[in-house]
Image (tube, rainbow, N blue to C red; front, top):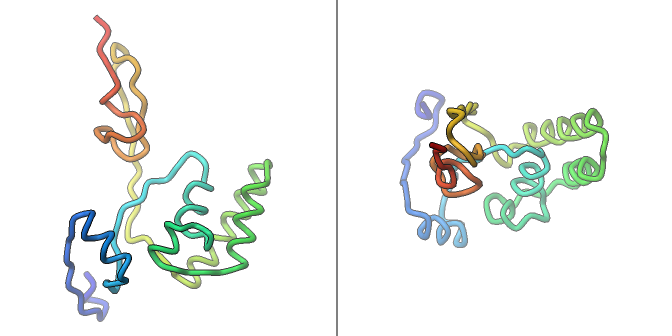
Length: 141
């Protein structure tokens, strides 16, 4: 895919400890990783992109005052329509400057039989150990 648009690319998959070490040393040209969206958009916009986020600074180091102000205002705003407007404007800034970009997006739908109790849909995937999933469910007999 990349060579078709003029990039010479070599993909080097690494385990998590090696990946963290490469991040610290800035020993990479591009980082490919997965993200899941949250119920509140601030969990994505603040953590992944805001200049005060240690996670964002470790991954790309991008700083944009206009973006930060838009996201901070959205965080303080209770009106859903105004929040959407502010996050949309912030996303436009990201799409213009491209500190990060998304290669694909996956929507997931989860369903469970009514006999299964305490199943909590997980934001990442149904079998993960974070945030619910099948690990805490049981079948009522």
